[in-house]
Image (cartoon, rainbow, N blue to C red; front, side):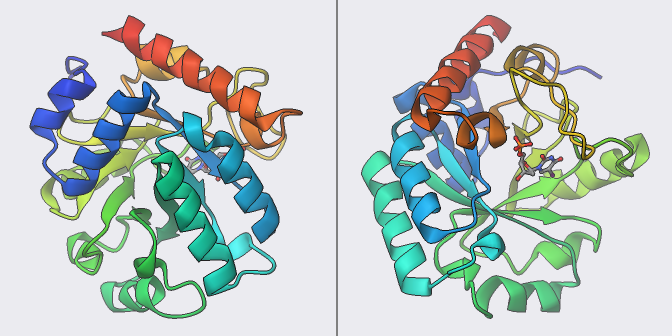
Length: 250
Ligand code: 5IU
């Protein structure tokens, strides 16, 4: 059931969600399909990384709940400024996984008030179609399959999860290590050019694998960038590798 790989221009015709349109346009403008995962633990590190990699990315992926000194004004206002300056989106990798009512509260309330600032969020679809109704004004990237060793997202789970993702108007993309239907944008983490694992279950592939075999749209790189001696150079390197692999996969 392999589908033809569509270009970003073709995806613009197929993917109507406003966040899909935005990220595809940024991709074409910046010639980038790179998302950097900013798994750092202080506001300063988050801002420094965003400034360095900003010119090279389409989105910065956060785990906002690992920031030790999170402050709604300090952390978020500056991050939003940097995102505007360098033209990238904010993707909060919250992986919501509860019933709709609880997710609605986690999305809009509490310390992080994700609905106030995130352009896109990740969510499990484990709780079913209706649980995704609460994510208005944001794009949802559904978790269909995970990159880690021994994940329970087997073929049957992925097929059922994909049906929900395709059907739900709030969902415009999916995270997977497999090809997914063309009406969704595919986001692939577990990308590293220098290593195949982290000793904690993560499994890495190359950008070439992601674009050629999975026909991905966006690669997500964490430690390959933020742990590098020069994060800006590393981001540029992954950006160029990702764009080349995309072009060659067409
Ligand atoms: N992430 C994965 N695999 C997955 C999903 C999310 O690695 O299947 I869903 C997240 C976890 C981390 C980032 O925030 O992507 C990858 O970071 P590294 O490139 O440092 O492994």
